[in-house]
Length: 234
Ligand SMILES: [Fe+2]
Image (tube, rainbow, N blue to C red; front, side):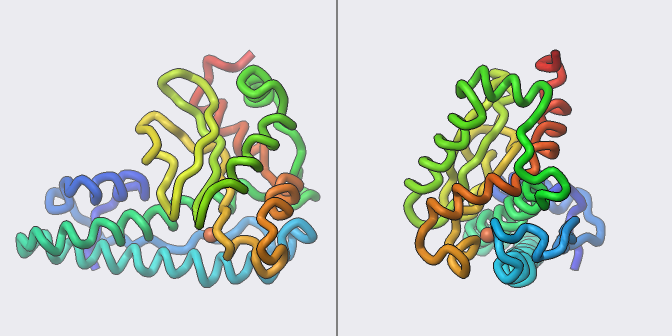
């Protein structure tokens, strides 16, 4: 399988736009990333069963289908099969987005023993206060938007690199945050698909949203913020 080497986001964007796959190729497929913690390490906020199935089954399926769709896309492009190229776009967006979003999500979580739930310090903490009033207000707003999202999707804390400000957005299905704006960088994404919480919380999404904050890795989000927005540092 010959796929062009690039980041997940660039592949997703270029695939959607039908750009450049024939210009530079190397052997690369996307793979399921390892977690930096055990499946049960986020309990009681998120059960080990949920984490294992979510990672090994759901995320793996996105990766498998993403690679498959990209392989089919390359074949279609090599044949000049424009209808097939067009037909593959939705599968690439869905599965590529699923892979990208979950890869971020695992990093947004960490056990309490490793700082999970510890409020952000430094420039991100100041930016949250400036944009939303307080961390508590941010959490309340993200919980409300995540609970109100119809069907499956994600609620995001993003950084608008153009305006240097934090934003809260939701995306349906597996659409990545960049679909809401080319300048948006995801700092924190919360998966509100039922597969992320149903085994433990049944249909009570608000309870899942209330508890996930106990294992949010604000250190990771803070590092991303400071890397993307160094002028905000004080
Ligand atoms: Fe998920």
